[in-house]
Amino acid sequence: MAKPTTTSKSLIIIGGSWGGISLSHYLLKHVLPHLNKTSPSSYELILISSSTEAFCRPACPRALISDSLLPQDKLFVSIPSLFTQYSPPSTFRFLHATATSLNTSSRTLTITSHSPSPHEPTITTLPYHALVIATGASTPSPLLGLSSGIDTTSLRASWASFRAALPSAKRIVISGGGPSGVEVAGELAEHLNGAMPRSWLSLPPARTDPKVEIVLVTAAKRILPDLRESLAQRAETYLAALGVKVVKGVRVEGVVPSGKGEGVVLKLGSGERMEADLYVPCVGTTPNTGFVEDKGLLGEDGRVVTNEGTLRVDKVGGEGRVYAIGDASNFAKPGVHNTLSAVPVLGTNMKKDLAGGQGEDKIFVEDTRETQLVPIGRSKGVGAMKGWWLPSCAVWLIKGRDYWLWTTGDVWSGKAWAKE
Image 1 (cartoon, rainbow, N blue to C red):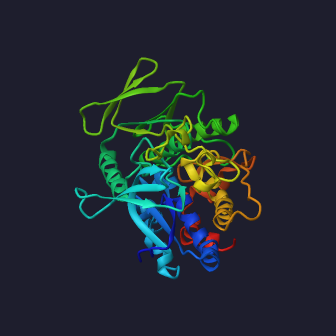
Image 2: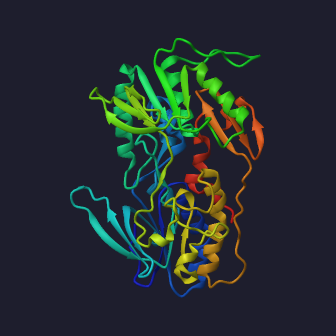
């Protein structure tokens, strides 16, 4: 990409996923053209990501099993290719790098570039006129997403190791009773034990002779705590029909290698020990905010303290022009739907700030109604949307058939943000 001129002002977005890519498109379509026409200074947008590929993380529970289960050209998409549509090229740069230090006092961001030789990293300090933190969060398992500074090459390597160990596994343990844990358990169980029996007039019976023992362990009193209890119970019934055993009220407190391949020994809060040939932790995420020098900008959970209505980081101050969106921000409950809903709000408020502060703020209002879709295997699922219960077939149609890949094309390409 073309290098900026000496008079250009840099708008930096850190993070190449749902929030970062979507906001980049929005700014390039609706904000930079306006600024570059009305301002004496030129503006450029810099998108920084540790991966050169956009990746649909919600698809991991199925994608980790085999490349044949989901279309790879939709699962992974080159980020630089998404932005060749914008002209002139000098308005946009993509940097394959990891943010290592943010100093809001000096208004600088230090990055480590991913050079061809990993032993010769290039450290660069960039000044910014405005900055957006969209770095997301890391999962406890390398199978379920991109941890801070990790790219899709490492993710594929983790999947390859897991797949190689699958055929010989006799017991697989998954910890965490949220959507990820339930989805991973369901996908693995159907792949290894076969589809659940068809039952048109009643719920399917529990499978009593699974080929592989799959155990889902949760410290909570029930799985899927964000859904009504009846849906959680139905999910447990579907899991049982696939041969999954659910253990509730027990926390995994320690994990040590068993010395047998990928095997581990789990220390449970009950005092028991459980051996597993494969173990997939699906308990919580860690915000990718370690590069933020001023820890006063972070909440107790490590997310950036963000104005929930405007998405500004108010502690930096109005002239600081720092914003945050997505799972690294505490503006709303983590989730792709909240991130995408907030993109036009943040884009509009940035346009106002960068143009001199004229006009009213646009305010994001989180929809707190029960909304969660959880596929269980390749044919069933439970869920609700905006407070309304959804039948299993609807959960399959919306999410379960390809884990949102039918939606990513318009988001990654920018078509979803064609209108201001």
